[in-house]
Length: 151
Image 1 (cartoon, rainbow, N blue to C red):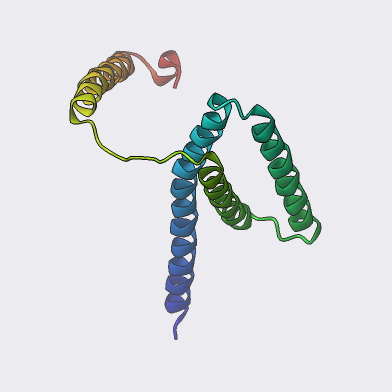
Image 2: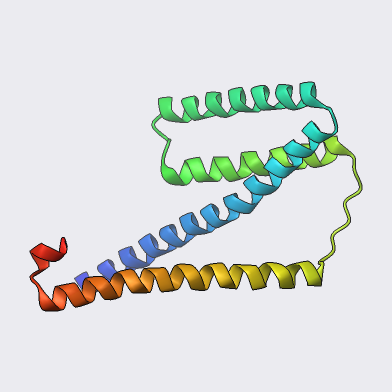
């Protein structure tokens, strides 16, 4: 195999590694958000002592396992993300079974429509604000020097 072949294989390995890390990040975000909502549900059910015990125990377990990984030089971004997603998923399952409220999942189409209507207005406002800023920089850069623009 030529030198170019080895470079291509290394590129594919690094690309797969990066895709895996991005997948873990995008998996961790909703799991963490749902777990936080379930933890807040315990607070709303006046199970504050149980919630505080869960928080203290899970933080101690998380810190101890991260310390062990750090001590054995196995603490990388990939290992941290794997452990974080696994830990948050286990915590999510624990919260789900501890709350004991029957969940019913449904989509309120009217609410989604109103949220998108409001969100599109905010998005377009932010987009046009960004566009105005960039057009100003473009015009100033066109008529003046780049040092005077501040770029």
